[in-house]
Length: 261
Ligand SMILES: Nc1ncnc2c1ncn2[C@@H]1O[C@H](COP(=O)(O)OP(=O)(O)O)[C@@H](O)[C@H]1O
Ligand SMILES: [Mg+2]
Image (cartoon, rainbow, N blue to C red; front, side, top):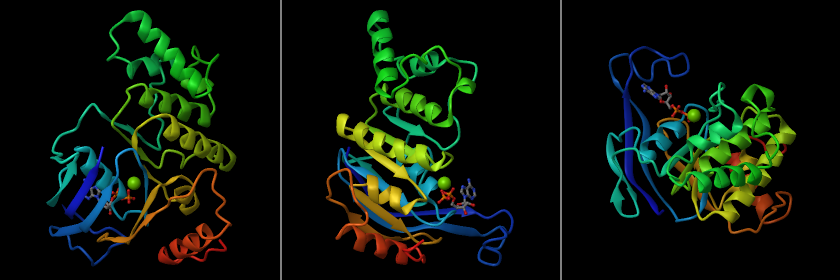
């Protein structure tokens, strides 16, 4: 799906002072979180959003998905203005989203409700469980799985819906370093296998540069687009090799960080 964000602004009514933004938005006033955002996302592409914590990435994702509305401006999805949630838009969040009282099989089955033929449904569920490397664990409950396995089960549940847009909000943020690297590789494979537009929020610059066809860097709030970078590099990517290394240095500087970190 082609996504066009046009002159998008979002304000919230500030109810009380926040410690971070003390003085910026007095209580009772409107506080602008997103400011004049304009960008375009190509169908079937993998787009990463990065920016400081609290800059409005999750808010922007909710607006694109139709769960929240913009204060002004619009979001066009394949030319149509998006104003309500769609079952074709699927979210994966950082927090565990599996139902703890259901097995992996039963959790994935929730995403497969649109498949009416009983046999085909069971077949597909097993296929997707297998795809994410969880064959043999279909009868396990979430508490019997590692963090990475739980993420995989969630990815399977999201993929079986065959969504038009997959929204991922810091999906691997709570995983250990090695598991996160594995999940990154798997997401590259998922994106290669499925013709799906993926929007992916991460606080990890290297993760964005490893995964994205496009990386959008946001400023602190009121958040503007600081950089909109197209990355036409094959996978797997070596972030140490030029010209990707130069882009990496630029993004670190844009985020106010030193690239040697
Ligand atoms: N429903 C809401 N009401 C008031 N303020 C909100 C609401 N949702 C988010 N905000 C504010 O908007 C800002 C951006 O939040 P969020 O989109 O979660 O940021 P990010 O995902 O980039 O960390 C935060 O400062 C938050 O306090
Ligand atoms: Mg967020």
